[in-house]
Image 1 (cartoon, rainbow over the protein chains, first blue to last red):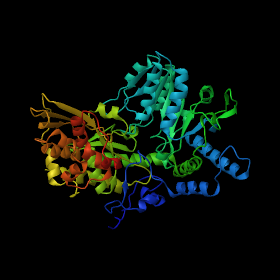
Image 2 (image 1 turned 180 degrees about the vertical axis):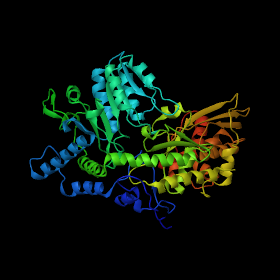
Image 3 (image 1 turned 90 degrees about the horizontal axis):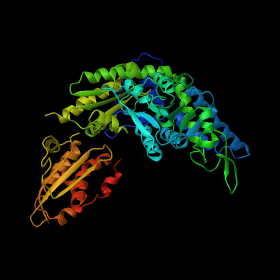
Image 4 (image 1 turned 30 degrees about the horizontal axis):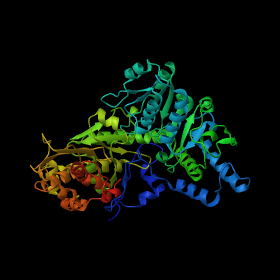
Length: 422
Length: 135
């Protein structure tokens, strides 16, 4: 029942994943079978470093009152910390102004906000919206609903056999002059890094707005909105070491100003009479009700943690782990890896299937070996349909992973094959 | 892994009993496991009096647990009356599997039960309480 000592792993880069595990209390626990926890499911939700947990606890313990309301020092203190978190998000994403950062629950809510608010005001019967077959359901279903409600048509950009967007198909879809293109910067199901800069140029040439789902990208690589030239961008705090229940939508100020509110109620108004209401300015217009105050402050702490590591270093660390794991899986017969081979366009997310073994059985045996992975459709059923598979096993890396974890992944694959052999 | 993936579970997975589609059939139902999207269907042929099961088959792809569960469950249905089948306790299905099923896998183990009940009742049933712990 002893913790297996983690042999030091040397990864070129500015930090050691092995050493960073000490920052994350969850790694103090053993798995159900008494093994060291090898956590390879950051793509679903990331563990929290102690500094984030402390920031949330400190906000509740010593700085908590409602924000933007109280004319007393404690409320001003809470407001100032909450707004500081907004500035951190803006700076982390390279947004021109923190007034363009709307706090939401997660990327799903951010995309729904755009689909309901911008979508219902700007999309009409006969219009077209473009998304892709590579998307998370969060970037498909809101557009399906918008299309169903307005009579617009939703087009899906096809994907290639190795999991990249088919850019010729994108051009063909853009030739029909859609109102908006909604695409993930990184696929959560396959790990593909999409050419967002190129897509932004093509979308704008075609007169479309571009929404970027950065839920899977922002935690793992530098994001610079001022360079991307997109119009909306969505992130989830929980995937980037922050608390659950907090995320952000960035939108161009002029677009946000022109959009009607999404949810209505307190704090998003300037004046309410019995006849109607006058909307507050952005971002308050989109933040009805008491927000997730401590969670926003916790997200700020997560951003501080990532910024101290350096997002270029985070990306480099994961590129190294991806390359090692991709190679390790290639050496095991009976493993089919999905997504592009090129580490330049493949994030630290590896989806694979084992011949003759269902991903649920893979994940159960992995769990027995102490390796936490996701098995299923990863909320991306169109991707599964594309490859005619019911589900995949997905291993995803983050800052606290190391080469021991890559070895544990390969060992767990072999252990699974052994159970099912014969 | 000796506990869950015992040899007889793997044997049922590799060579499932009663796999396929019966044509013609009297009853048919299909359902899916929301956790993974795996679909399972069952077709049943009734006795002349239409009150008992003469033959049964299941189809669809899935994990070892769901396939073994369907294989074992369908093995015991021939000759049972529809009333008897409707009265099957989901706990019995888990007992027949004979291996410890964790909360994350309960829907895998009980999908066959849910599909069978849908077929003999003519409408979808809710997941049994046992599966509510499932994620």
